[in-house]
Amino acid sequence: MATHCQIPNAIERMFSASYVNVAFVGGSLTVGVGASNSAETSWRALFMKYLYQNYHPKYQCQFSEVMGAVGAAESYVAVFTLGRNVLPNNPGLTFIEFCVNDQGSPDKQLVGKGMEGMVRQLLSLQNPSQIIIVGAGARSGDIDHSLHRKVADHYDVPFVDVQSYIFAKLRERGQTWDDVALEFEEKDPCHLNDLGQRLWFEAVRDCFEEQVALFQAGKRRERRPPLPAPIVSDEFQFVRLVDPSVKSKAVVLEGEWKPRPQGFFPWYFDNLLVGQPGARMTLKFKGTGVALFGLMHHNGLKAEVELDGKEIPGAYLRHVIEFGKGIVLAHGLPDGEHVLKLTVAEASKRHNKLDNPGTQIAYFGIAGKTDH
Image (tube, rainbow, N blue to C red; front, side, top):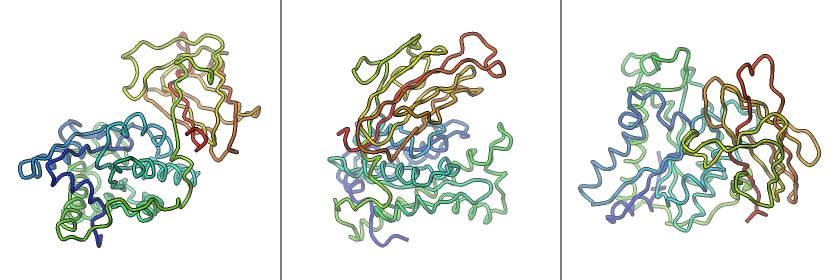
């Protein structure tokens, strides 16, 4: 239980007949995969409907949804996308959920950098966004929230334990995870049907109502507290995307690269360059971290990578379905100039049996203060 309102600015805007843009940042769980109609029955849609029905008639405030969720994204990938997808919309309230997608990462320092980077970016806005961090769950009930909760506590933002809430409600009703699990996907341990979406919404709603009650009781933190020192790193507070299809001195293309037609790739990419075997990109950047964003697809090839003359693990952008994917290639580099070379690998006789295999690249992500 909170002792003071941790999102006073968002509630003050709401009570003042102003507008509150509500941003949702996460993976497929935040997108609403599993809902019968993600625009109507996902937890996002239910929360936006709840805000409008319960607060607009009384306070004449306006609410708008800011979509910043991308399926299969981890915190340390999504942190590079906020400047494109979320921050320009001046969100008054932002929900962040990555506990499930971060669970499998062996690099917990990287997870910490991703979570802190997002929180620090949002709190550093001219009008800081208020934040609620959400901890989703799985059939096993053992998704680890500790790192994400630690970040929430450090920055004095609410944390909603959706995993515990859902299991508690299922026990009360004599139900099991089967009652919230998907029917159209077997062995899916995380995504939720409409009942699961409803329970998720209820957990978020209860947290929000608790914050409103504390605000009305005058138990509020200061409106703009100073940004505390990072507990892991502020490296990903300072990030940017580089689109290799846009002509610049930073990127040199060699070999066959062709743009994929507009409308044939996800909304969260501006362009896609399709590279044939042997094609190369060279990126010169100044910073401490670098990421690669591309499109997984059924005939994808590996992107082999060399950083400052040394081979490092690249990205195998092949999957049976198409979806965008980000990969952090390196972080914690010496602060200075670096050169990254990406080469499209040759086709595999085992995996690439269709014509014209290739690698589809959308962005490079650059981290580090020196780029700002």
